Length: 203
Image: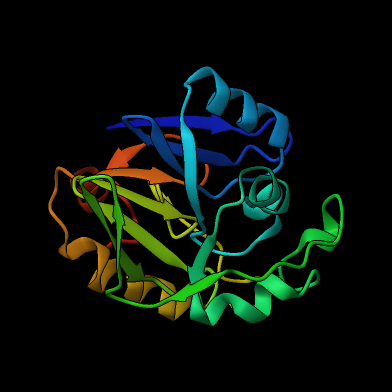
């Protein structure tokens, strides 16, 4: 399995393309559909689905185009539906264009998705948004804007809640193994162990 990271040029958001054999899935395809397509074509992989850690505009900017190009489903948490459908709540109206989308499948805490011989486990981590999730793929964790290297996501945006964010991180993510690699929605990778000792928000 290989994880390819593309950081969008405009809003500096991390898009992840996870490939195994001839197939892949896409995590949080933000603005930059042509660059995402280029990576997919260069790697000669077939996208199977898109999964969203949350519904903010910088994380969903290319969803519609990629869904139409590759005819693939979109997964998001069931509590993110309102935000995905509302350009004001998802902040896209203050970025480049109004975006309103629906997921094909709304998922919840503990759901398992299969990809090749791997299993994606859904961890509901409200706080940045009420339908935010982290995606655990064996020793890799896609955290969206919940947890960053030495920091955490904002909680002052629509549907955010600071206490819920801290609870999600401390009571769920910090129960994971130290060697799990964190792939955040912005900035560089880190590990659970590193954040446990250096992140000022970890209790």
